[in-house]
Length: 105
Image 1 (cartoon, rainbow, N blue to C red):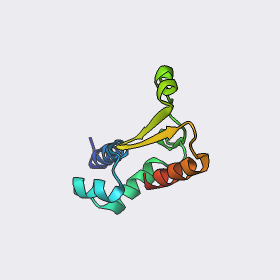
Image 2: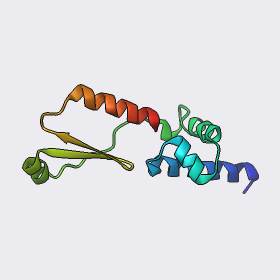
Image 3: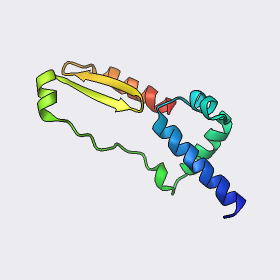
C-alpha cells in the first residue's frame, strides 16, 4: 500500500471514529492527539459530492410501541447525547436542538 493510501485509510478511520464517538471536534482531537484542522480537512474531503458518506439523511427509528404508549416518552440517542421527547413537546425547540447538535458534529 502506498503512503498516500495509508494516510487516506488512517484519516478515514479517524473520521468514522469521531462520528461514532459523540464527542465534539476539540475533545476528540485532544483525546486522539490530532489537530482539529486536520480532522476538519479530512471530514470535508470525505463528504465532497459524489462520496457515499456525503449523503445526508435520517437513520431508521425503531420505537417500541408498548414503551412509548406506557411512558409517553421517546428517547433520542445521538452518540453520548440522549434527548427525551414527551407527548406535549415543543416541536420548534426540538428542531433547534437538533440543528445545534448537527452543527457540532
